[in-house]
Length: 174
Image (cartoon, helix red, strand yellow):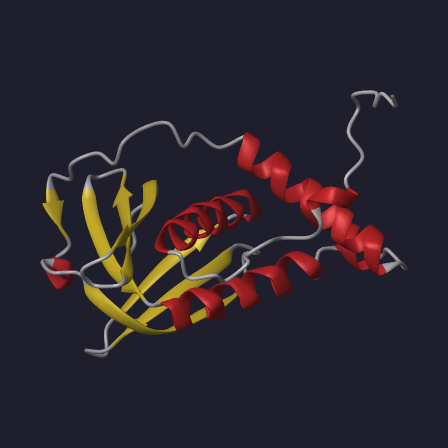
């Protein structure tokens, strides 16, 4: 996939017991990939490892502080994303995704240019490669987390420890 990304969505399909992950490009081409519970767990583990390798997180000595920093970074990235828009209708589906492809493996790593490449390898030997920045990977995690929660998969997907993040609002004791 060489086109720039425009929109990503993930929706649980109970009949398939899978998440349909859809990506639209700026040129309005759509790529559709089925994600299983096992694969979502694999993507999640790789994404959290990627976030934990960031210098701001890695330099923290205490595990609680690392988790708090991870959570804060995730919250900031997700707040900066726009999840309010419905998935736009594409002008065309990518030729290889007339029907959604079943992803059997996912890989996540850094490119030489410093971007993150998320690759879905499919049952039919095809690959859908997404070039993301850190905020976009946080957005992918967010939409996968919502879809997995809707699926009732009990994956307990979390980035960091949101309870450890100190908010700027004062607390009241009674």
